[in-house]
Length: 165
Length: 194
Image (cartoon, rainbow over all chains, first blue to last red; front, side):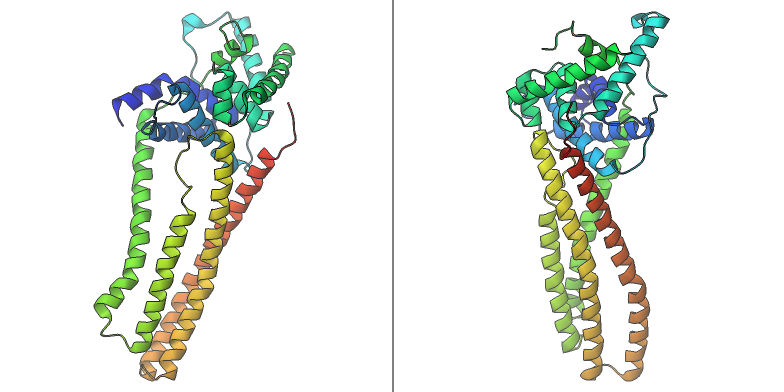
């Protein structure tokens, strides 16, 4: 594995973890998906032509791999499991109560994201990763105006879900 | 659209994520690479095997068996080319837009179903070829009766195990790909709105 690719993967490790979490609730399945996504991104980086930002390219490849994974595992039973996760740095942690509230909100948001149709899931998570309308539209193969409509609806649902926690 | 003050984005980026173990990825890649090379070798050798029989043992074969092998060779070569063409979308990754990727994925799963059905059909074809060969050997009196009987027993035992196994394997793959396609259609044909 080339050093550059390893660096790119390390830089986008958290992002890839969040893509995996968007599609898989079960810890072991999520780990498997994360490995599949990382491998796909690594292979794809060799062909990267610079038509978009590395982040957009990585997200596009990662979501495509996740779609393939979902199609393959869709009929298998699964359950929610949030154990064995890497925790943020202690200095960045809020107080215990705030942390519990935040974790509940994240839990609720993720559950809501996973219930969304795939396109809405992609649009809203790419937006939360900081991609523009045009970048999202390009990655999803839809028009920017369509991306905007889907995003606004999805954000409304997510805002409601975290406010109810 | 997504500045630092967006509460949703902030919350999203705060979530805990699993760490990537690059050593595991490297190991997985080496295994994948090895598997790909192995599949390629199997495809090449399975075709070359029949060619090799014709080339090296052609003089020892009777004219009827020789013709059967030529037919088998043509079928194998055609099968290899067709299956390779059907597998053209099965890359390990895709950087297409999501909509295009889904269409390509559906096309590849459909092709996989076709390959599985082709494998099932090839079992029947192989059975026909074996039967025709045995009948030909008997009819043209190309093999002494004792030797023909031994060959017949061996062929029956071998094909009674090999052919059903091949059919069951292909049938399972066919059912699996159909499940995948149904799941994909359900996921992307979903009318559920946000």
